[in-house]
Image (cartoon, rainbow, N blue to C red; front, side, top):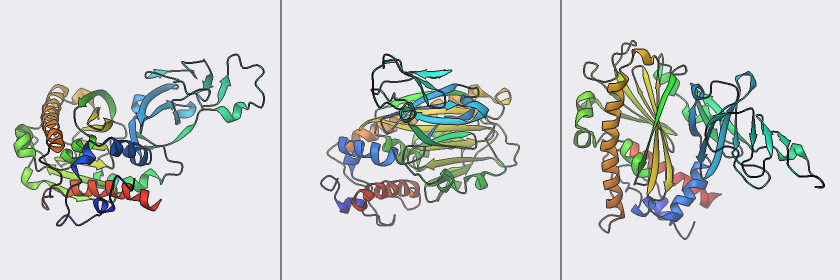
Length: 361
């Protein structure tokens, strides 16, 4: 670590003086590998909604920090998370989302109960000093927040509320706890995951990249607020031309929360769209769009999805263009707009803090 990232690159300055992170952070394989273990394995990660696993045995699978994960509905409505890894020789338990009565390894057939305890092994007679209780699935810290499920792979994480403090109060009386999951759209993008985050974290590009969105939002009233582990962008939307319809709360605001490192909450009247930005390589990522609605029967879904698709395709194009520019010989570091790029500076400062912990660990 010390040889790859000089301490000078980890220095955090005020936005008025700061430069952006070096371009190599967007394509260097070592940086990517370090992020997987030092950031994604140590932070709270969104895996989905409780409404996606309503029944006993319903199970979601995902991958975080190169670790396969499963999240399962337990008796009495509880939810647990485990590594999707058999304790015998590392085989997978599930390859797709399913409703199960137990977990059976796809490699050698060991069977685990829903609660992760080992139920049975195959052809294991004669093995000495083997304790079933010590060979259950490895559990993972899990918390639910407003109906969303978060997991954290670190051994002793701070409570999720510590990271999300103030969001519920800011949204009050809006509450999407009971919003119903509708569908997921996933996009493979040829850019580093941080390029997508940088782009999301500022409205600076809206007039040039998103002409239709620019007519829906009041760009001149666009505002960015910074908190310890997240930032909030908000702006008024025009209910007459917006695809989201009118709110019953007496306010027509769009809220865009970015929770470090890679969780995005897009909140508009009657709907929640979450984005999970999943790194898949030094120069690639997948962005998962999950759509939730307060009342899908009263929502113009067609207009909502068409508008979302338009904005996303515009973002994909500019992000892939930017990735090529970052990898070119023409670019290394840039500067921040004090007025419009506070969120980007905040995000990159948090990145530096996590990398700096290597020196102090």
